[in-house]
Length: 217
Image (cartoon, rainbow, N blue to C red):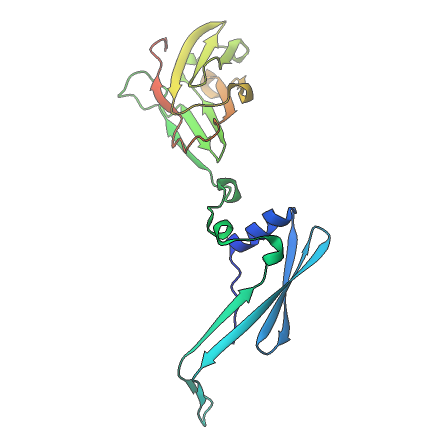
């Protein structure tokens, strides 16, 4: 039995080169030693012939058991798409995998205190964090705001005064930053922050690098 391996990288590169949002692929038998790959891409049909060659020393015995070794190779002619080996060897973009990581960090300026007040989630280009800072207990959510003036830190204000701040693990785009605040359990307000990471930023692997010295909590 012959098999054709079409890798995820190959399909992704075909999609990018043709410039379509979706495509369907079907394998159709042509001859006993040939298969054809037919793709309907963006309303147009593109045909990729797959040619198989085989070297086999198999011998059939009386009981139907085959022995020996066999090898086969398959070739796809995509010269009309301008596909090169460099295209196939290029790393896939991170957003293709949709991978995200998450974790918890302390919001306390005291090093030995682990309050897990910062729950963060990181994706390829986005950072989100939920801040439940124990020191804000009793503060009305409506009086709280997040200051994004600096692209390497954030500050939480109460009635316009900074009460908590932190230096972040990397840079972000200040014009993409948003926040919400609402009353939470045990009278501790819940602050949601979100922003896009700076272009070219590597994985942060966390949210807080250091609690700001101007934190009153």
